[in-house]
Image (cartoon, rainbow, N blue to C red; front, side, top):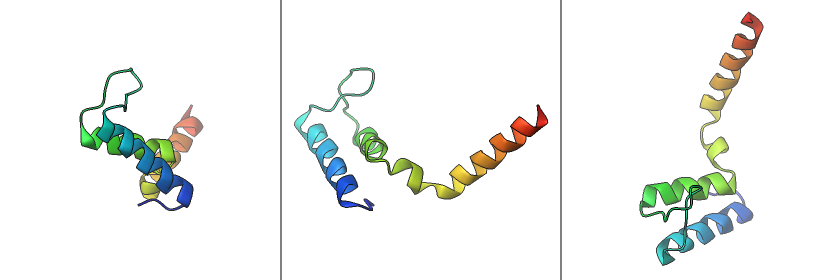
Length: 70
């Protein structure tokens, strides 16, 4: 769920673009899948990192351990 007003507005804007058929992926192709549109909306609003804090911590720990091994 959007946590700030700016994030909420960004999600609304992206989903409106999807419904109008104007949303395009990074490759320039039209987005036809609703789940892909939601993923784009969360990514652009900056929520995708906040959604999985536990997973981000695990990855950070793994990368720190990998750099120590080298």
